[in-house]
Image (cartoon, rainbow, N blue to C red; front, side, top):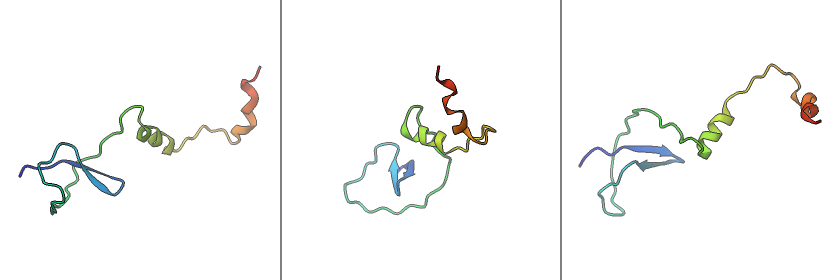
Length: 71
């Protein structure tokens, strides 16, 4: 059988291509980390990745300037 490439997400290994196995076939494998897949632009994963990054504006109280954009 050929090597199966998969991504681990939400507690499950998801194959990246079709796998020729009958349903309910039990397999054994030893994961080998080869890298991380970047989220697709515009996907919720990409948005969450951006939101999870620490944002440092230097402003101590951003709410203080909330109404500056109002005419």
